[in-house]
Amino acid sequence: MARLLIRVNEEQASEPIAAQIIIEYKVPMAILSAHINNKGGEILIEIPDEMETKIADAFQRRGVTVTLPKQIQVNTEKCFSCGTCIALCPVEAIKTNQEDTVEFNKEKCLGNTCSICVDACPARAIKSLKTNGANHTRKKKT
Image (cartoon, rainbow, N blue to C red; front, side):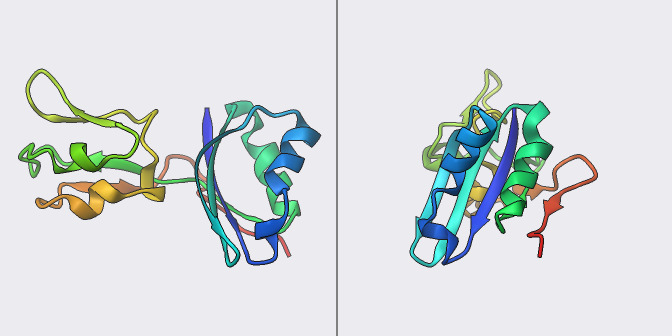
């Protein structure tokens, strides 16, 4: 499954853009996170890999900015497994393994759209990574 971060401006915030795309392209779309108000906002969606380009282009044609969210990585040499990140993770994507070291579930993690763990880590052992692939940002078409 591919993840896209959709950013809408003030005018787009009240439009049913995601619903229109779901209906038009018959795409199963999971909304993993949404933060929208009357000034705009962002939605983290998950769609089938094979539809990533088509759906990103559909959002762009409607004037929406589309980016690929960054993943989170733990520097195991800096991490001392204090558990702060585990306690704060809103989607329970972080746990300790049998060796009592921190482990991330990349399928559950919201990446840089959340970043609570990055900011909370006292050892600064957690960081956002650029996503793999050539096209990291899809800018709004004008």
